[in-house]
Length: 419
Image (tube, rainbow, N blue to C red; front, side, top):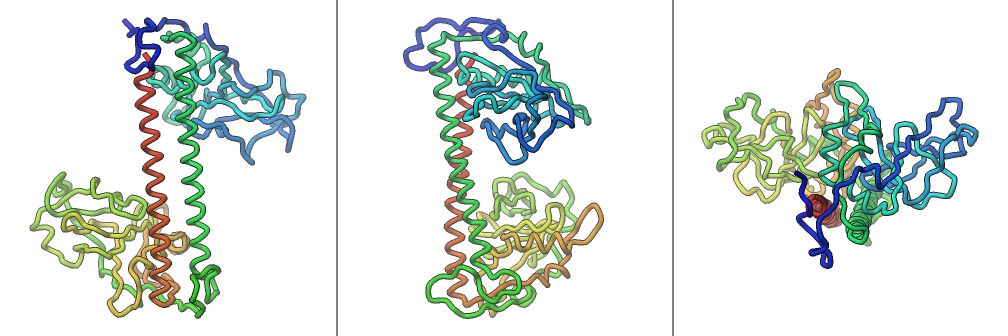
């Protein structure tokens, strides 16, 4: 027997009575999308909304949208407030994603054949309902796909689902909360994207571009030419990478000696909570791959060229296979944080892609990495660059955490606001 009330209700509805069970089709209208031929496609005309017009929970339009001639359109146009829903996709996990259409010009767009359009008097509530556990269970049970098959959501299956509904006033209250949370998430997402774009632009302005001796942007007081040195002249690299012969049984879930691998890299830092451990006996066997603050780690297999900086080690640590350990030479007059930021920038990845060896599975050999060119300026300027990029990374990380917290809060509310 279905529950009659949700776990969380807003003030004013605590004594509003039980929710009622109804068929989904009895309070929404669902329409199939436009089927068109390749000859109907045009450079302009009527926009055809597809799965790519849904970014997480947000409706978007883009430069890659498809247009058809107006003569090909034989279904009603979409309008702001309609809910766009993916009903079929080669990636089954994308089936069922949805967003409210907004800011659409009247009579300018239709939804495509692999999409459904949901119309309702209270679209904000319906859009929230499509984010609830009820809808997730429906998707898991009814959407077919996998093993190369196209995932498919049947219009009739969705229409026939039993759903618990509150009064229209309570629906509006839930819809407003969901809309507000989506709005907050969108604002934080845009702020984060702007910060990331700023950092990306700065990376190309703070360092000299190819065949140049000076960067486009400099701090006040610095005017001299930069030099270029190979990584091997500036840093010490181990003759070999981390442990090659560890058995699975040696990967411990807890202990006093961390084992760091490339899968523990998290946006340039080490995520120590995901690390395994090794026994002291194994840790002591090779001092050359024991890590300390200032070590810069670079992956040589798998996702090549990922970089992480070792700082604030909570426990002694050693290095697993597939990762290089790079340390600045004592006499190099080089800031390890400056080197870290340059190696983490897109320049190393571009170099790796061009020079990695192997067929289907690529490898980054030390003989390739040692020749990677590093632009060098005086130490004081290096420190300023590193400090600026450190600050930007901290702000970006803060916004990423805020965004993740908002998304988790939204998910928790969705679990509690519906029956």
